[in-house]
Image 1: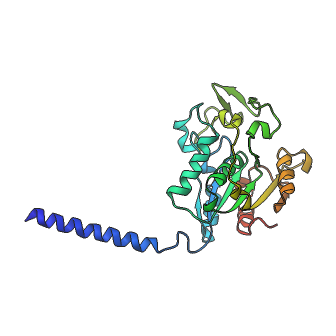
Image 2: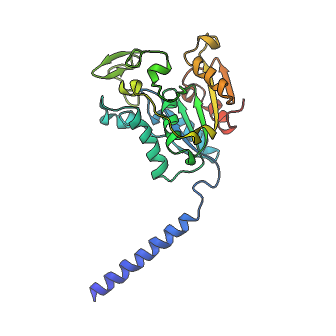
Length: 262
C-alpha cells in the first residue's frame, strides 16, 4: 500500500515538474528588456559591476556579471595555469548553461579579449557587443602583442611573482572586495579567431580618456583607432577615467541602454 502511494505521489510530482518546465519554456527569458552580460577587466571581478547591475535592473533589464576564474569570490581557484582560453570558456559556459539569447555582451579593458573570444565561439547568442575602453584583438594577438609588447613580455603595472601580476594599488591587508593577482598566461596567450559570423554582430566602442590626457596619450588609443577603422560606432568620453562602473555608473548605464549612442 505504502509502495503504491509513494509511486503515485512520485509520478504526480514528475507530471507537475514536466508541466512547470513546459510553462517556463513558453516564457521569454527576458520579456521586459535587454539581457546584459558584463565582463570585468584584469585583476577585477563581477563585484565591480554591482551598482551598474542595480541601475540596469531598475530599468527592467536582466543582468549577469560573471567573475572569471581566479578572481573576486573565485580567487580561491587562482593558479598560474589560468589562461585566456579558460576565461573565454567561463563566459561561453554562462551563455550556454543559462540558455541566454540576444545578449548585450560588454567587455571592459582586458575583458575585450574575453568577449572577442566568446563572440567567436557563440555569435548566435549575442545581439550586440560593447567594448568599454577595452582591447580589440585580431586573430593571433595576445594582450601583450596587441599592446605592441613582445609576446612573452609580462610587463605592465605591478610586480610579477610566481606567474602572477600583482596589482600595486591593493594593500596587502585590504578587505574584500578588491582586485587580486592575475595570471600572466592570460596576457601572453594569443587569441585564435575563426568564425566570421562574429564580424557581423552590431558592435560599439566606448573610448574613455583619463582626465588631463589627450586622445592620443590615453592607453587605449590604438584600440579606439582600430574600432574607427572597422567602421564601428564610437563614443568618446573625455575626462572619464578607466573605471566608469565606479566613477560614472549612472552615465554608463544610460550609454548602455541607449545602445552606445552619445
